[in-house]
Amino acid sequence: MSEQHSNAAHDADHGHHDHAAHGSLKSYFTGFVLSIILTAIPFWLVLGKVFEKSSTTGLVVLGFAAVQIVVHMIYFLHMNTKSESGWSMLALIFTVMLVVIMLSGSIWVMYHLDHNMMPGMMPEAIGEIPHALDAMPAPMDPAMHALHGAHKMP
Figure 1 (cartoon, helix red, strand yellow):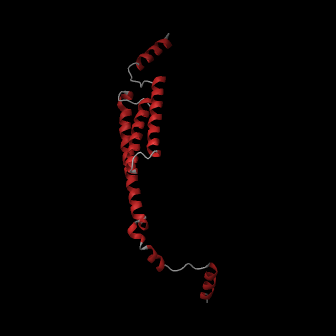
Figure 2 (figure 1 turned 180 degrees about the vertical axis):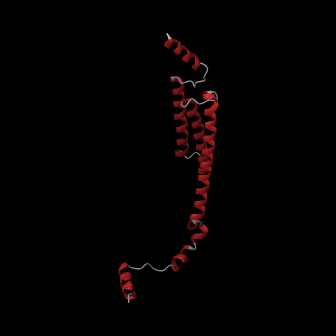
Figure 3 (figure 1 turned 120 degrees about the vertical axis):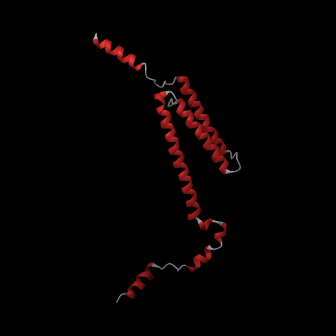
């Protein structure tokens, strides 16, 4: 009798907590179809060269990626403002902040590395390359290096 009483109390206690609703087959199918569409459109944009500038294509693809992340969170992870008393929303906000910081920092570093490490690829520097090569000493043949080193020994 006490076991039935504790199970009833246990079930009643769980009734007061908000649980995230699990998706139905229809919601999973909707998320799947949206994911396919949100993947196919960027492929078409890139392969069809719809936009003249690659930077525009990149921004549009990033926009579709952001929408697809939202679709995944809603339809597959079942995230909303009511699940887990809002803690999942706080975790989402923190994650978005970290991703934005990491992506913007990575793009900033890659831009400056490209700008500072590849000066020979810029059109104004191409004319200076042959002069720099003429000033460099010619590489030494390994056999000549051995002979040259033998003459230096006392």
